[in-house]
Figure 1 (cartoon, rainbow, N blue to C red):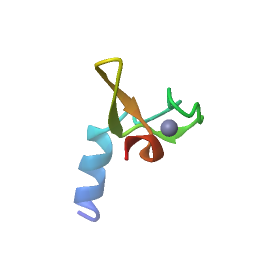
Figure 2 (spheres, helix red, strand yellow):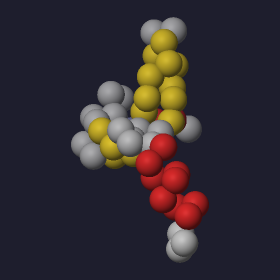
Figure 3 (cartoon, rainbow, N blue to C red):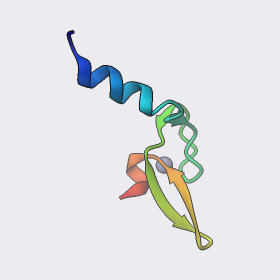
Figure 4 (cartoon, protein in one colour):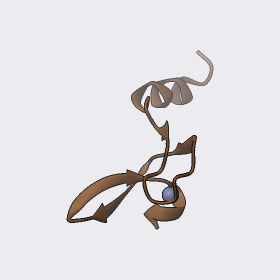
Amino acid sequence: MSKPRRGSNAKKILNWRGTCPICNRKSVKILWTAIQNERSIKVCKHCGN
Ligand SMILES: [Zn+2]
């Protein structure tokens, strides 16, 4: 009954934490996409912008 929006959103995104392939930071949020070698890759917030 409490926090219904938080719970559903959290379950949608599961593997959002990982190592960024560009800056090699560990345990960062991989929620942004970047184009590298004509392929879209998942990157962290700093590399995504
Ligand atoms: Zn990065």
